[in-house]
Length: 339
Image 1 (cartoon, helix red, strand yellow):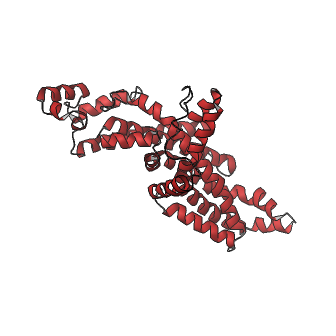
Image 2 (cartoon, rainbow, N blue to C red; image 1 turned 90 degrees about the vertical axis):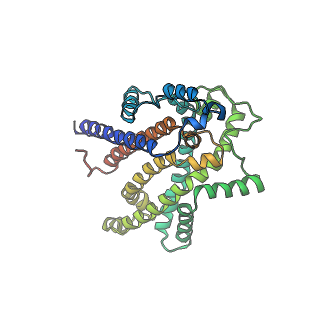
């Protein structure tokens, strides 16, 4: 029963969080001194007051701010994210089209960050102050220090342009016919349609942007895993396990890792949310058709509905991930009770 109440309470907490996001986001639209119609109307149309007034009435821009906000919220609770002035399409449909590409990229980046960061952090802690420890600290420092856009440009310059090891921007080679859209996830659509040539090329295109996007999270996870593991390895029960004759890696994996993994679990959850929200630069550099690039293009056109839609979707992802992490905490550590 406590478990059910805990989930219900966390879900209810998201309501004021999302409401505050809509308030601040909507308020920012009035602080930007730019007319969105000026970005979509031609110069001749913008000079015609009748056309401008018709567009304002069409998109509700002539209404008072409070009325516009209440209209937006009333549509939002029905699942309507509004319409894009630039594309003249429902934002929900635009996000549904771009969202799978960002999820694929974020999941691949998370797998790379976790797959490299956790083993590297464990090795750095076990072989403290040895060469592997110094290498891991250097890699983690580079990962968290180098800006994503700069790392992406360097990766394209060397791995694509000079060494030809990995393909360039895009999600699929233009010479390869894409598979029929069934789920929107390119890799899954390739598998469902048995397009193995497209699957291999899509996976090949995914590697480079995923490496770039996951570099920061990899550095963060490595550092947290290392420090957490070092703290656990100094505990008395670890020395007792060694005294009983257990091997080094038996003690590390059976006794130390489970307790050391709790802070890392939080980092992984937050990292995935950051990757979903922070894919803007990576998607722009690699011409990746995700919601990050969609948000950048919408911002350039001062199209507020898509920006609000992307913000709300990312906020929901953050809330859901935090809830999952809290539940996993209780599974990994029985001392934690969900009250």
